[in-house]
Image (cartoon, rainbow, N blue to C red):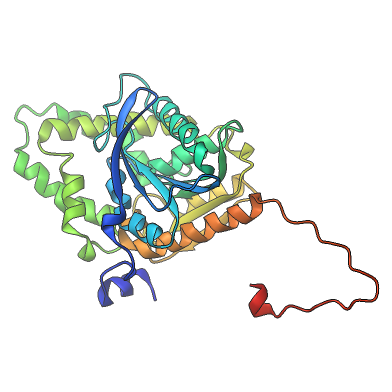
Length: 331
């Protein structure tokens, strides 16, 4: 069953997923106070899944998936990146280095729970890849979902190379009315983030459009986008040095990041695995939280098995016959 079929036949999510299982708190990392969403057990010495959201998003994007992961018994944490959600604003200057320091601090603090599997969507995918290049960080595996900037796209060309339309819009003598800005955002956002805008949840759309309450805030976000796109030019230097297991997720109905971007990342990191989901849009955590949670659980379990020491086989005693184990039991 595809993600879209699941949407049409039933409410997304398993019958055991309980949104109330998501715990909300606040912590400070690298000098930024932020909101933390947590689910699942807090057992030390296991595997901890850390989730990073995309640009103009927040940890709330993961809520349905968090409930699914908690139902599966997975220990998971999602945070608001600086400048988004309820986190402290970004400071003046380059953006990516600030995100780097923040993510490093989150991972360092979370290492007390054991092996960390880091997963990110869009900008979160970029930050996950940058963190994975550091051997000193406690990362056992990485999942990159629709990371931008690896291959040229219409968004990069428009925002990064041709910023004149943005400057002209910002210099209009009469600002665009706030209601018109919100109306445009409500139309555009579902079409960019979802595989099918018809099934977009109103609550999720409102969360995105709240970032554009008026003309001034919209032009500020666009200028911030232009700066981020320019920083993406050098965001992936040294990416071929990644040594940990890497799963590259490509979304077939992604209107922001092309499939070629994921394919290039897969080529740059030869040991990586490439997963193409034709029915997913730019934010699969919105399209198919149950399917995404299943994929993350499967990957984290595989990483757990790879990092656990395997028991040494005992030598057979002479005169005994080997015992064959049926395939079903061995799986």
